[in-house]
Image (cartoon, rainbow over all chains, first blue to last red; front, top):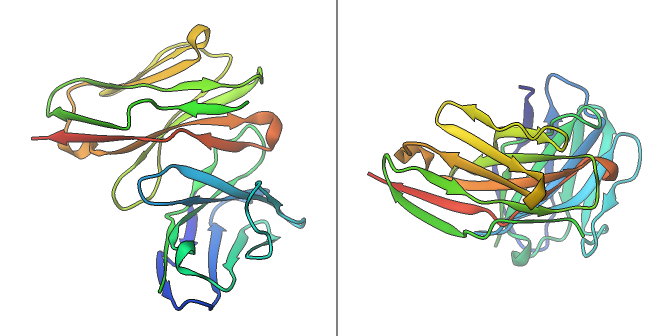
Length: 115
Length: 115
């Protein structure tokens, strides 16, 4: 299957700082990328959908000014958690797909801890 | 409403037992996909199967089998002769073709296989 690389795998940051997470499709062009958040012992919840070259579509309840998503190329999307707080500590995972009706491939996930 | 329900939060079995993980979904869409993913403790999502809404044929892959029944909106997953390495959280997910391909995940079932 196709490979999606997410970086970093884990990060610890201080409260109030910003953290950027990268999601790259290594061997295919991803027209659409999705960002999910997973709290411990819970399911994956979609945060936003990003299409290359256009603004991300955020799910209800997700603050677009806090979770900045950029999908500037067909192989890279970034999620920036701005002014992070301890309650933002979570597992963030991206997925990428080449087009509709295709399988979405997941990155390895990023475990964010805000102290 | 689009929803996936995995009623079993946790299942514990002894090695070599067969185990079935239940998944019930809700959607008004006629075109959709159903997925099963495995999430080991490391966090990454491992793709197991994709089934489209027009294909009700059951599938077997090694010790894994899936039973898709549109009449009951269920897509159950059976592991035959379970092994300790099968211990993980398993997610059933609904792929919304008419909503840009986003995935709606069930709550997950944590499977523990004891030696």
